[in-house]
Length: 396
Image (cartoon, rainbow, N blue to C red; front, side):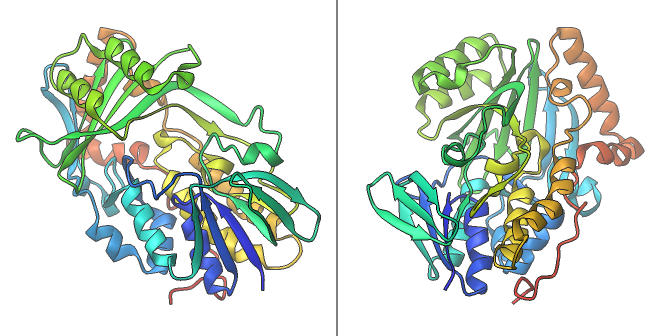
């Protein structure tokens, strides 16, 4: 019986395990975290990614766990709304807010629960060494355990540690010149089910979003040519953000205070992963570790679900399977990594005049017929892919 080790228990990993299990493959998922990571920001399901969820039979569960986000408001430094886009303003929910919005951690939980009875999980461990002898991949885990598998799939993040064991990834990450943070803060009586975006001079922004847990998800972002902020410890990163945003009014002071008390704070420099190949021997990459498109693209979830689906269909399909996986996915990835015109600078102007002009453009774009035209520029290319119909990868 074919055995596959999957490193990473977020989105692509459990989704891949689902399709492999249906194929009769024995799957094991190893996750560095001691337990499933249930935090994270809102993500969306669109196009082909949503179709994969439908074929997995989890679309209703995703809908039930949705954030309920009604749309997004763009506000100035005083909280005055300068323009707004409702989720139902766009056909099939293909606007800034998708029809299916869910927290990353909630989607991960749904996926893990779906495969829990058929997949072995190893939490609190990771891959330390890999030796591919051509017939199997011999793995040494950080815990000291040694096991062998027919294939190893790396389904980790943009800065995957396991990827470095196999691939030359020194130039894999292309920075976008932006740092962002994610954390949860308490909800107040003034909060609504609308997301809110506020841009400040200096290429700074705050994004607030509703969730389904009675709290609020916040994200501070700023653009800079400086590097190395990822290497700061969490107190240093929070101190950096407080210094950068302490001059702002509206919700900023409240969010800064909430950030100090948050226990799920995460900070990263945004980038994209671009590699000439996603496989080497019996080791293959999927999801962000292979082709992260960045949160700005709005395509991360779709790429993870679609990539898992396609890879599962090719993994045990004979010679050239990984070549077919790459040939099928590469055009979709290339489209996903084409960011909206001017992104991320357009929503993060450098000057006061730039912010004022951004608000004027938003006001115009959110009105009437222009709003429909704007959907062409705000909707990611999630539907520019036709899922192959593998015999075992069709609705149950």
